[in-house]
Length: 204
Image (cartoon, rainbow, N blue to C red; front, side, top):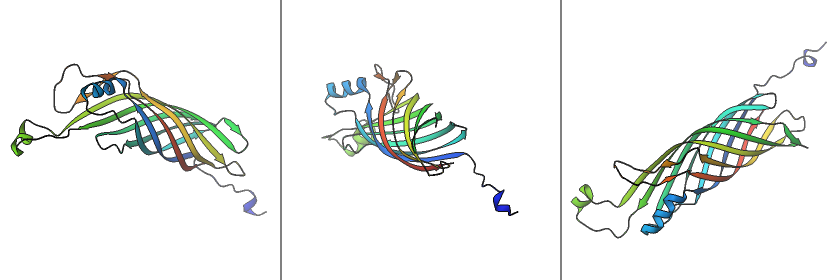
């Protein structure tokens, strides 16, 4: 009897995903102050990319992911990064597709730079008392919910992520901090972003 009839290929039940897309940011309290002071707007639109890996136990996935984002706005620049631990499910299936809901918690760090225009003064002034930009930080614990669309091969032994849509938000209202400065009355926000992404990778 041929060994080929009894030997099965064994695969580690991992899903690896890469993703990239767009996101829409919301920090309403900071944005309100920016408009009042006439220093532009908080960037509502940005680009993001990241990767994740998860271990599958039957239809349940346990894993982690990280992502980075930026925006192309010239005046005020927002950069964010996050690391998330998540639980997901492959139980919702229709035909050769899976709708995989995912819930995660993690940490997010952000930097926001306001560019100041039409500044003047001596070179020494800008080394000492004047500035041509203001740099802020925002760090928070976050919750993330998304749904990923996956396709399956004919034998339903491999899963291929196609796209995902979701929302991230800080759990509490946190303060925007000016870097290297002690300030009063800093705005607090529950910073959130809605995102839509293309995804690719493989799961077994």
